[in-house]
Image (cartoon, rainbow, N blue to C red; front, top):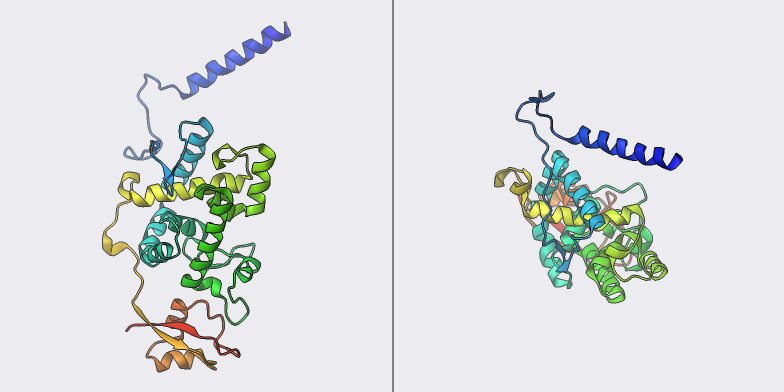
Length: 297
């Protein structure tokens, strides 16, 4: 009797659920504008990260990929902002990635990390590549109250490339290297070993890392095919990086506002191009050679 009631309950629940989502023959009266629709996205079958195929035929992989595509497609304001910023910074990143031996797809990892805005995360990660202080210092970045090279695009990209290439050597996969950028090499290695697997797509990982690679893939797909996902814009709508020239300095700068004025620009504009300068002076007691970008008027 108990078993019979249980089965009946399950079947009955299934019927109710089916009836709930099935389309009625009666005309639908929309509670929104007649032209408003939220359309399910179709998953591309040839998704890859740095040439490594995504096994989209697996049910959990399809659902995780679908989630990130939906979130990033229908969070329209954020999606359009990311497209605009990508146009500004991808031309800077692409040759740096090539120079340091990273696949071009890793520009989407940088975008996923920081959204290309100079804000420190709630755990203290900073710069385009979102390095923590300790990690940045371990890889040779100067980080103090006066100078923070996590905000230097050229230097932080070089360090990110070094980190990711070491992860690739360790795991044999760019996909796992990307996951390790989020969870750490030790964290990924420990989980793979405990579970007896060698693929990101076969491992059970913390929720943030479970979503991480799929967010990168979603950004790659949407930004590479914006009109396919409903993003419409003119080229003039996109952000661009103003031209600059470089001044090399191996001495202290007592007042950066005066330094900027000497080169015909403002403190604000100089700091926008050199956010690694954290104060209104540069100590430089060691006579290190710094390269400062000056905006071209």
